[in-house]
Picture 1: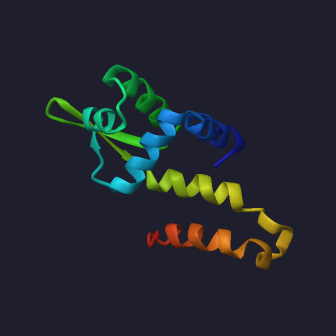
Picture 2: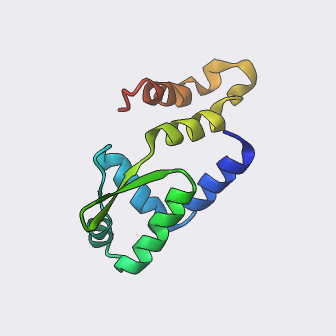
Length: 115
């Protein structure tokens, strides 16, 4: 990941509706959910939700696919891990005891054993 990609991802998350949708999809797992269900669950009009989901997908945080007439969205866990690793790669100036509790969950997610 580079600076531009990180800024794009963080910018996409810097909105209440998009952050809520992303967090919901992270919890939902790799099977994701239809855009209409996301909108209903968050009480957001479907057209506005589609706009937000598209922004998250452009930033690489979500992936989408068609299932008949529905569009499903899921978190892109690989890209999420890359962002987290990018944000913490220079953590603590070589003193892991300072931020070990921060890095351990990121490492666990990288090993696909997220808590």
